[in-house]
Length: 244
Ligand SMILES: [Zn+2]
Image (cartoon, rainbow, N blue to C red):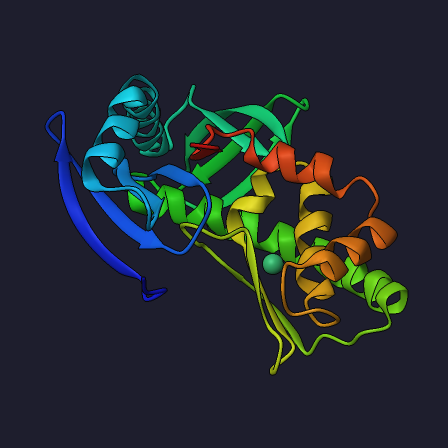
């Protein structure tokens, strides 16, 4: 027996499944966005036939996950045209696009609409860039007071918070540089989610790993953190595990 991780692919029901054998107790299966890649972590004691059977028994679930991701991919291909739904601070708004020969801008109207003014003939990329710049400005305004408040509470100091569009992470923390990255997508989520991610990353300055101490610190500073985490994860479950 070895604890060395090795990964290979098997074919199950016409699907390619990445298998990672590890010195673990339980069998895990994950379907990962955006393409619905299937990855299995299996205990060393399971052979390929047992893994195949376990995957077959979950084919329905796997296909549903993949369909959801395919739908999300389509949905995320926003056109930034009038009538489309866009999110801001956890609320859904209807987009109104106006073509005007003046500097592009975005504003909120009647609590139900996001106005977007662009120059005539602006393409999709330009319209998207204007909205993203607006999201970024929003986070840049929200973050400094939050940072100040939580630096005092946690008794840590952060050198820099940067905002970035990220595919797989809500935030990240470079502990050595004391630099935190926040996902631009958080502008679309309720403010409590932004707070949760910021505090989570700041707690990494006290505890690098997601261990018991980390969870204790989160419980102490932000007792409802699990609610916010679930809110962020309510977007389709990408991961499921069960005892085998
Ligand atoms: Zn973390």
